[in-house]
Image 1 (cartoon, one colour):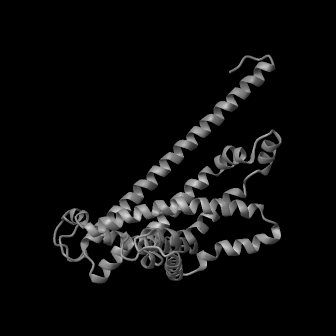
Image 2 (cartoon, one colour):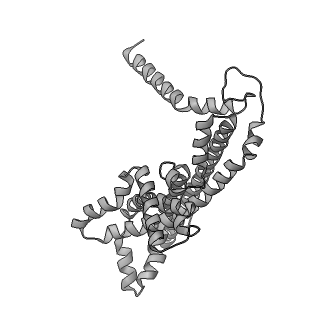
Length: 298
């Protein structure tokens, strides 16, 4: 075997080890969800069963945490995406000398530990509620509200980065032309900027929701007496892992795969439509050129 063959063999072996290291825990967790034992394990195999999936849905605390995570994620999307969009637009409008300072300020929450964000959010709103003489049932002490606020402090910075990446390709002459033709700034924003940012908006919404859904460091301090899926899972792990958690992992993996496949199919369908539209436009252009030249169209 030549040195090139040995090198290719070593690279293939390294790639195989890498993917085994990456996916082996997922396969083991998935197999444990179907093993008829009271502890998540693959060996020894006691028999195939599906009982851990109904047991997962019978867990009221788990279901409550899941529903709370959904609502918190939606609240974070509604708050962090507009904030990130506004911050990105301001970033493109401030003077070049101030952009570095502005960028450092708005991105700083990402660099802050989640524990600090959670504690500071809890302390700030507690002091504000005390100053406003608010009752304990008010939103100042609501775990859902505080969690949405605490998570949005750093997730909005993530969304801003997505919008900034999209705005770097935006042609400002479109806005100038629209303003010269009599459009208002509001019309330019809704008719030109928002359609251009639509892919970034959907990407930012997905990132904000998923980041909120899996967050633990900030949530564990702000959620207080309530619970989310991550805090429930952390409590169950401390008390002893059960196979229903493996069943939850299987469901999450299945939903992720289905979503990824659906997105890929939709993107390929859009690419095919775009290619067909370009081919049709090219054919019409050729037919027009031939007609103008006095030749019969093909």
